[in-house]
Length: 89
Image (cartoon, rainbow, N blue to C red; front, side, top):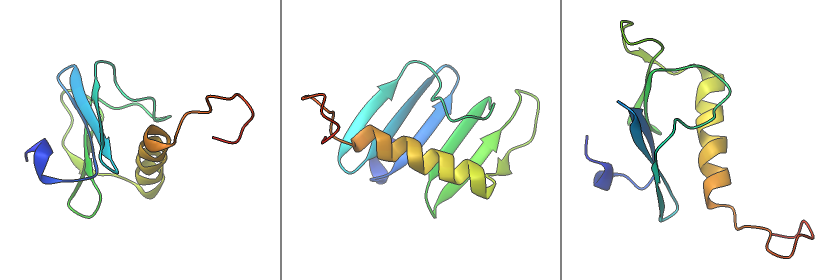
């Protein structure tokens, strides 16, 4: 599946990945910190939600808490930085 086809995507595989949300695109050079271990991940909400825990394991659908972690990661990606340091965004 092409990264360009979807507005929201989190993909990590073979040491590279991408995070896309709300028009922002970030090339990943390290696996996203999601709070759970994985070898590869392909997340486009409602389209593809698959994970491989180990290189030799089968692909499986993400669990609800894993989906929530992916969405939170993407939300943090597009949140404007707190440039003033006052907690107001």
